[in-house]
Length: 457
Image (cartoon, rainbow, N blue to C red; front, top):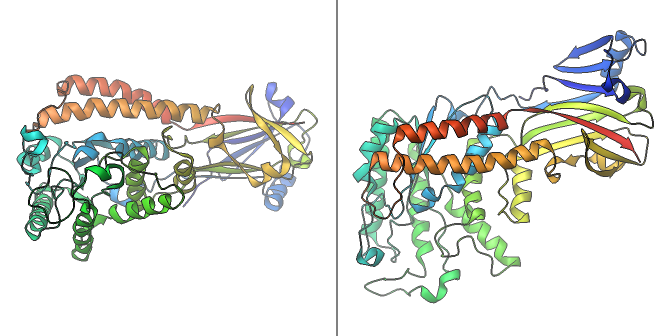
């Protein structure tokens, strides 16, 4: 259930510069300040009832997503796609800004080349090393991390880029069941994620047809193999497994975008998603968690009888949360989807008398808008100079930097058999460094009070 912001002040411009209002009205968490002798408290209450001066929705969110309740430590397991970690950055950015009072420790232990099946194709990595098997390190990971909740995404490497084979499918199934059993034995919950899409189009000249004995390059129809893996995993929901289906939504998204842009791709090498592909990961997780779409929204009644505005305009203050950070690599289609699904941050001003107004935050010009545009609502994410958007931009950088430090450190701490990985800092040093960054992150993620003003043109 949404709750109003704890402080929202609507004041006459001249009043903002100095002088204390004599009377204030507090109701449902909002403060509106009156000049001496202008309106009685009784009349003011009547105006609030009849006109609805300001409506502000601020999801205070004592009710965090059910799957994240009692989950102090959240562990992500997977292959190189999870190790890349952008989708985890997006998810953490959302949680930090939407639930600034909560604390989840998110740990990325994705390992490139890894499988849950224990399989490896002949000559993997040019014959330098076989694919690492999750089960070689799983016990150590669970013991050292002691997670409350585990997200696991495997499958891309488990079919070893060959055509569908019953034995390989069984290996994937058995490895997944073994993973699940070990996580549950460690008193943690697990959420399975189906494998992402394999896209042969960007590497069409390097793929191979069906019917060969050996596949030094991927089978052209490998995405159908991953579809079978995904179908089996989704079927396990009948046995009370929690499964997020990433594969089919990613397939649909790719097909839809290709209708208007045949060259569109989610992975330049067919396997490793770009920022758009990682967004689809994050989107499906957030949808499965049933998180709210709104950052915050407010409606201000700008009628002169309420604001007592003059040609000088009027000012109002609004306490709001920071929006989810937006990745600058996203194309306009993705940015629009993010805003619509998870980042609604809007101000409406109704009952204005003048045709146009300049909107300012403090002394910073935001833009000039018609009264119709203001009544429809302004998407605050469009204005990069706003304090909220500046903070979100800096937060995204810090989340990514901190995750890279901790991912390398945790992989080194747990240990693995995958050569060529960066050696992480010792855990104490990494956590000290990460803690310094986290302080900056949490400061940026705190709700802020925007001081906004409207000046007639």
